[in-house]
Image (cartoon, rainbow, N blue to C red; front, top):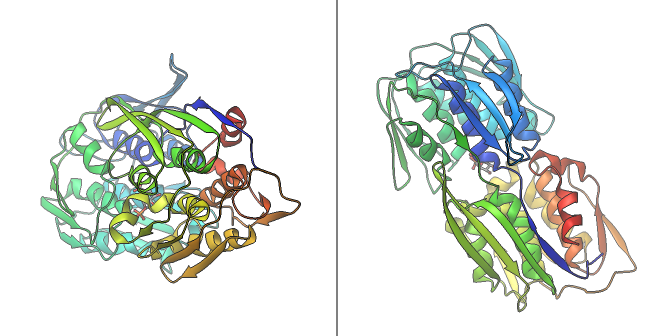
Length: 437
Ligand code: S3P
């Protein structure tokens, strides 16, 4: 049902991509440091549980600003990074593909056996993409028919290797970089397209020799780092839900505080602006190695259609379901191409996004690597009908269709079949929605 008016300032949950890395890299460093973050989602809590199971988490407290502050004692030396311990350990990665893939690389640095398990969704996601390049370096990694459980027998001497990845994945790149810390010489990872650069920024912040040129990242091993306090900014992928809502709703003025503004993550702002959205960006310096600032989105003229291909897609891969909601409200026909990766995320996001839009009465069509959507004006009034949108417990699908309903997209109101799954990346999503309405 459309909300009449949306107003407020939100302090969003911590960036998931940065939080996973801050926790794991600190657990591999030398010495002790803190990682501070607001409102970690279930995926990040899986990483906290994993480093606790490895013995790296010393204390948890609440900072003056209400942030969760984790004190972590790393398992590495200043010249040789490593996760702590050598006993066999099983780590539950929950729903998080990023955690499972980064840990597969990181676990090669600890002498024991590390077994990585995940929930039903994660257990269907492809893991050979990370196992293959690690094996090429000499790592002992096995998957179960290409999937979790993943077993890593760490401590082997790895060989610095030049990798050319078939998929542009920051998760795989990060996993290889973490394994490369023990290899002698240059490990280079070339990706077929752009990827988010949090691994490079954070390792550089910690003092590890990493460079990135175009789509090639090089780490020179062996290397380690001294732990250093890290604060995680708010998640631009969480901000995306409100940026889209504010841009398509007729009476919205929403401010989002301390959001990460890494250019490899702000494609959502650039694309919404291309569609005609009114978004003010006020940079506020850096939080550790990451730029951050305040975003304000206000209602404006109706958005216009946009066509997205490979160059656009990389910087908005996680935001495409909610961008589809913007497309469904825009004038004209929008397309997304070159986004087949969406089929192997937490769900088949191409199939579920299009099916959900069609359930809302939107003219939407599935393409092998994306979709075609013809928009219609949003409704200001409730509909007499109410559809149920299937989410397959995918947090981003659940939130995208919840804001579609809030903004009156399509011809019918809707409920999602599971909104609890929003907790994976955005705990308190409903509270924030309530605060705005
Ligand atoms: C992530 C990289 C992206 C993204 C995921 C988080 C990361 O996946 O979709 O949500 O933190 O490295 P790929 O690496 O598979 O592209």
